[in-house]
Length: 165
Image (cartoon, rainbow, N blue to C red; front, side):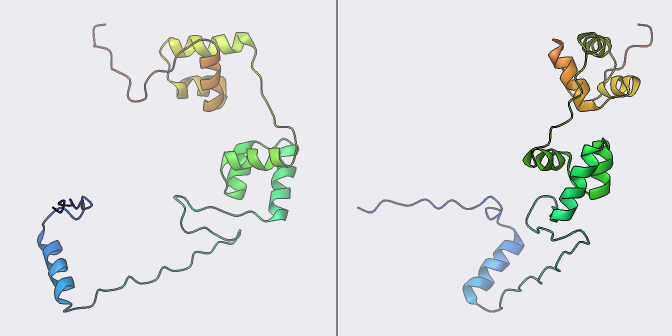
């Protein structure tokens, strides 16, 4: 006795819409050839080759450009400025610097500053307000809150206090 096989269709094919029925009937009757998609235009960039199958376009830095990134980082140029100048991600800068064997910049905060950041955040300020008040980056402020024993609130809007409270 043969066992019945179940065929699982992708959910986009499970809807028996008019367009799908038409497509299936044309395929079965071979009345019309399927239309082919036009080929994509080649992406080019003045900085180098661009990968076309990534979620985000990626810039491949040439060796001289990597050396310029290293030089800029070594003289103390802020990472935000290097990111905007070369059009690369922050993590790419870290990878370039560590692969070259250069020491990374580490801005250690004193325990008193960490506690101040945690106190401000626990007092109701948002992370953006804390970073603006103290003139530091979001990532560093978040790390300081957690290392000082604080907990991050869920993201989203702050609840508005009632008018009389």
